[in-house]
Amino acid sequence: MRRLIAGAVLGVMGLAASQAMAADEVTLQLKWVTQAQFAGYYVAKDKGFYDEENLDVTIKPGGPDIAPPQVIAGGGADVIIDWMPSALASREKGVPLVNIAQPFKSSGMMLTCRKDTGITKPADFKGKTLGVWFYGNEYPFLSWMSQLGIPTDGSAEGVKVLKQGFNVDPLLQKQADCVSTMTYNEYWQVIDAGIPADELVVFKYQDQGVATLEDGLYVMEDKLDDPAFVDKMVRFVRASMKGWKWAEANPDEAAEIVLDNDASGAQTEKHQKRMMGEIAKLTAGSNGALDEADYTRTVDTLLAGGSDPVISKKPEGAWTSKITDEALK
Image 1 (cartoon, rainbow, N blue to C red):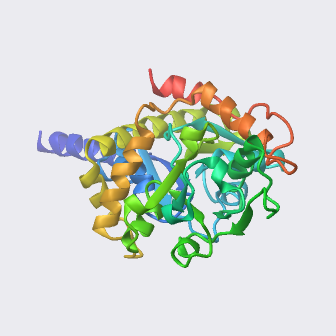
Image 2 (image 1 turned 180 degrees about the horizontal axis):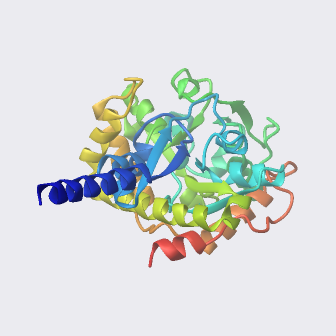
C-alpha cells in the first residue's frame, strides 16, 4: 500500500513537473526602457497572470539603439510593442508586421511651449522654432503642419524644425519655442526642471485630431498561419490586458512592480508613480481590441504627411482582430 501511495505521489509530482516544463515561451520586445509605459506586462508577469495562461514570458527592455521591428525580423522576439507609424512604415519596407492588439487607446504625444513665446494657438507657430522627434515620430507633426497649411521650411510664414533628442533641453535652453513631449514623461521633465505648468502651453495631438496610435502589439504575419502560435498569442493578450486593467486600478502598486524590474536602477519612485497615473489615462477604455476608426485616422494622418509621407498607400492586412476576438470571449 505504501508503495502504491508513494507511486501515486511521485506520479502527481511528475505530472506537475511536466506541466510546469510545458509552459509556452513568449519573448516580448519593449519599445523603450523599463518604465511604467509598459506596466501592464510587468504586472501580468508579477501577479502570475501569464502563469495562469501557461506562459513563460521574457520581457526585453528597449532603448535608443534598439528598433523593435528589426528585433522581431531577426527572430529576437515573438511579439513587439511599437507605435503604428513605425510599424506601418516597416511593413511597407518589407517587414510584414501585423497589429494583434491595441492596449493604448489614446495618444500621449504633445507639443509643449513656453507661454512667454506668445503662442496660444496653432496659428501662432508661424515663425517659431519647434523641437520634433524623428526616427518615425515626426510624421504626425508633419501631417499636422500640412493640415494647418504651415510650411516646415523655416520661412517667416512657416516653422523651423529642430531635430530634438529624447530630452527637453532645447526648451530649457530657449533654443526652441516648443518641444515634443509625452504626457507621461518629458512634460514632467520640464516641470521638474523648474518651469511651472502655468508658464507652459500644451497642444495634445489627440485634441488636434492628428493623433496616431501608439503602443500596440505586433507580430510577423506568417506566424499567424500557425494555430499553435495564434493560441499562444490569444493567451498572451488576455493575460496582458488583465495586467493593464490591474495597473489602471492600482497605479501606485503597478509603479512599484515596474521599479522592481528596473535592472538599470535609473528610475525613481516619484517619476514612475506619476507616469503610471498618466499612462492609465491612455489605456483607459481599451479592452485590447483595435478600434477601426482609430486605425483609419492613423492611416489618413500618415498619408497626409506632406511631400514625404511615412507610407505611400493604404496598407492591406496590417491588423487583425482574430486574436482579441478569441481573447475577449
